[in-house]
Image (tube, rainbow, N blue to C red; front, side):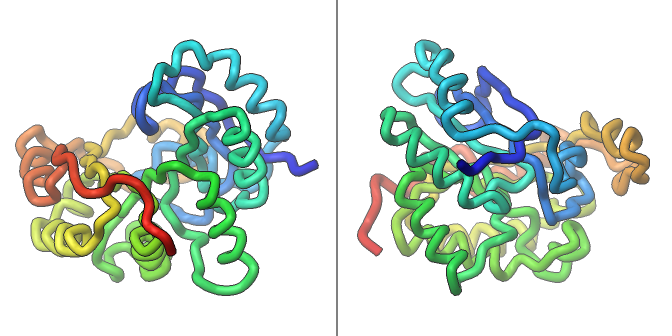
Length: 253
């Protein structure tokens, strides 16, 4: 039996996919985003190990609140680092008729070998992905997150190829991810896709800064303020956030 490394559970998530969601935050992430508000999910170990059956049994207690759109969202950390566990969880969820969502930054993605075959199997039981684009410029992305973004953009292109619906999320960090030229490049990238259902601009906040201090890590963006309403609106205008966009259903791979 595969067990997942769980960080925490949110039983009434309202911002992690359509409807009311049972949100499973998994432990472990290889990215080191300077604006991360869940730095406590970085380490790969967890004292909370749970099976897919245990989590589904817990989730089903809240099913009456999901309505027609809700279901299970797996977030993190980075869910794709536990791809075998998430696949088992989602296969069992689909057997129960549960809508499934992955919230991912895409960092583990690669189009080769056994991992790619596993990813394709996971997509067979995934209804929707929430995908973060941290920064479209590759140099700035590495500076911001510690990792490249070529494979992340490759994952988004692959999801478009198979017609898998996605929501795009862009965290707006003043001085880091708010360059209008970069946002225009991101919009050009998104305009080449047919599977984007929604684009969301998420204003940077410091609510997770205390976790860095508890972990003994200097907070990387000390002194950076949240964007103004005007800055957020300008980014939304460039990216087309709020537009109900392009996809309906899957196309064959």
